[in-house]
Image 1: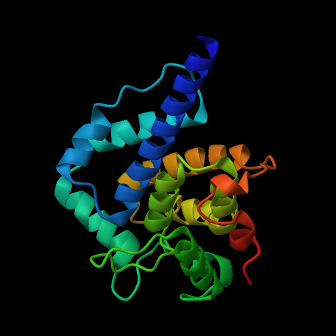
Image 2 (image 1 turned 180 degrees about the horizontal axis):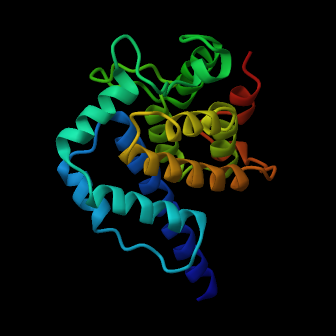
Length: 215
């Protein structure tokens, strides 16, 4: 009985983690649609005070006060702009100062090992924050050691720089709350993956060592 309850708790946690990664991916992939806005405004936020609770409440309030045209314009100014937006959502830029650098080659290599291919209708490079959140959503049911390897290599080194840039951007309004949510959640994941996790390699689709040791 206790074992079943524990398994159910783990499944619920995995589902929640998947959903949060997918929410972040959707919000960074494009300006939120009215369907997403309605979802965010109707969230049942936990009562216990925490950084995540504060972030969800901020997102909920920002969504409730949002206007579709303003959201579209804000996303355009922040992430697209003329030539480049105010905020750069790519890992290579935050880690090397340039686009299309080694971090992008590394994530492409590791995604190939994982058997994950970019959809034909997706134009952004694979080191886009939306793409990386989507990858993590796909991996939440995989072994912890594999999740840890991908997160620590491809997200942990730069997400704080990205969320700080977003929170201080002049055009940021709704997306300030999204930056708060992103920072709060990925910081929790960083703590989760700060403990060394051993892998049972026969259970993994790829060898974790191939991911972590790629040069």
